[in-house]
Length: 295
Image 1 (cartoon, rainbow, N blue to C red):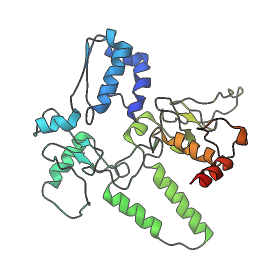
Image 2 (tube, rainbow, N blue to C red):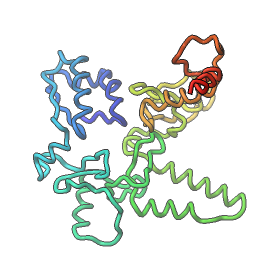
Image 3 (cartoon, helix red, strand yellow):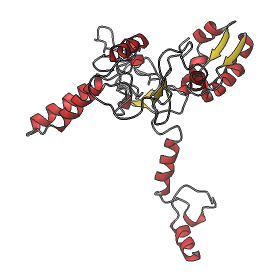
Image 4 (cartoon, rainbow, N blue to C red):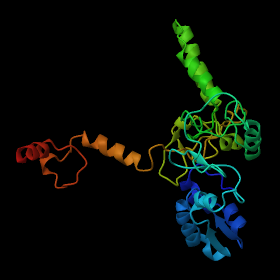
């Protein structure tokens, strides 16, 4: 079963769905992930929620990382294992990974590699040619998930932005072309789900919470939306635009909290010197001057 999640914290909402519970009921569950860490948490959570409705919950110890070491020929694994270090991605017979500079030109076995990519479903999000490396930090326009963009498409994109054009009309044309270029880059999950609402229009929420639209300009289907009035009889209905159930939050779940703390530290506390909280997030000029005197 493929949960089709954009991030591991979507697991709780996926498991809460009745359809998921029906699929897992009476089954033996085996999980695997990159290095086995996320499976530790996911298996414990599954056991706590529906452990009495399944025959057993197992996980691949050490994840695909360890599995490929135990079975150098790949065993039952097909494809590449994306890792979070300079190796980038490892596979059978390639323990050192793909990380490094993209080298142009012909190389032996390229055709066989491309055939494998097509079999695995690894292709450029823009031109749909076989490709299996994450370069240029390109993200899905509608959910923010990293996407595969080939070297040729990256080169075309960078060269078009470097061209100097004169005049306001030419500048607006260039900006419009850049926006259209971004819109064409979507992850396979957003394409299959028909997601069209830009990620920037979806509000960032805490991990495990469905995304909400920032405005009511879209009739949202994937995440949670604001209540909207039904159109009057005979009135034309706006075409529905679907938003992603979750948007990737770059910087981790703690990023918003740190950002809030920084903004609070520049705002004077309304209680001033009368504030009794030693851990108050707001700005206290009298405490700052006092600490300077002590030093």
